[in-house]
Image 1 (cartoon, rainbow, N blue to C red):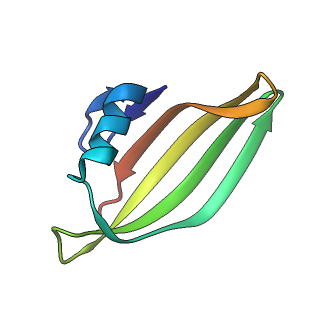
Image 2 (cartoon, rainbow, N blue to C red):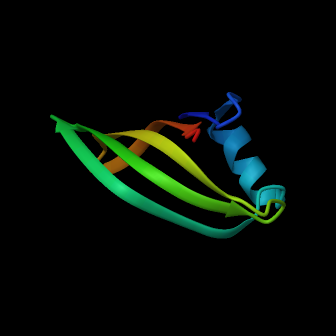
Length: 88
């Protein structure tokens, strides 16, 4: 698993899990919009828009996100995800 944050920081599963459990990233609100799934055999690519209000900010951020999942061992597994801030 590889995650690329809106700030361009690349993290593996352990780093991402540690960050989320640390409490350093807190949301007042978090929603997915415009979710679009494309299937390619045992692979799914999910395009979505995230509206997130972080606890430390007064603004709601809009983020374009792509997540890649693979169906393996009889379950869906996330293998990569990225988040890009939408400007404007």
